[in-house]
Amino acid sequence: MRNEKKITRLCVCALMTAVVFLGNYLRVTIPISLGGVTSFTLANIFCALSGILLGPALGFVSAGLGSALYDMTNPAYVMDAPFTFFTKGMYGLVAGLVLYLVFRSARDRYVPQLAATSCAAVAYGVVYLIKNYFYNAMVLSKLTEPVQCWAYVAAKVPATLVNGAIAIVFTPILGVAIARALHKNNLDRLLEK
Image 1 (cartoon, rainbow, N blue to C red):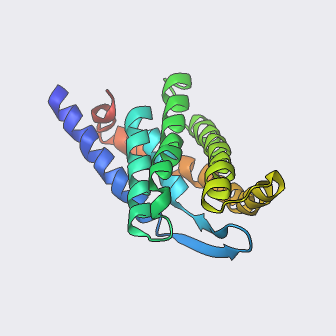
Image 2: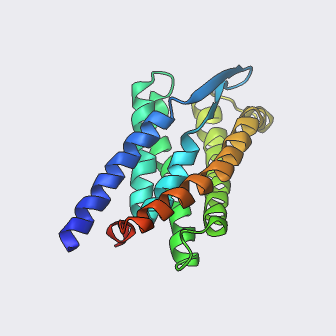
Image 3: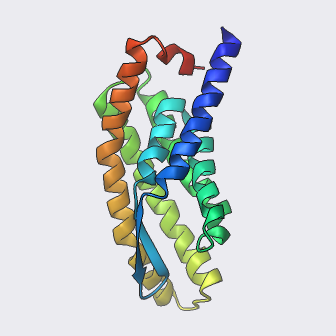
């Protein structure tokens, strides 16, 4: 039974990696005057869902790897792939940590999944905007004045907030539906460690 659980968790991790990768294609890219482009995407839903279904470690791997693979297939984002692995991976990590450590017995309920997704969205938003300030603005765009870097970050804030809000709304709905379906079919135990 132990090997069956490991294989099932690995298969679901691979599946969620593919879902996150494909979720990155569900985006609307908008040019902005400072910073090139910004995107409204549905991928954050699946990043948080990875942590909710798999826990913090495998949630980190599937969210980070799926997003980094997308970046590696898109010339506009290929330089960001290593950073994306960690920032998007953190989305799955935080969602999994909050859900599995704080809400141990109520993981299939809406409010705990909402709290986990909200914490993940906030953590990701902060780290993503810090990365934009130091890496994208200062290193890639070679902006030297703090006001320029803050303007760069400010151009990214609306899409970051909308993407986080979309994840906060839709991830718990999907997560609860999937958790209940797994429980009804006695498959939820296969995803536990």
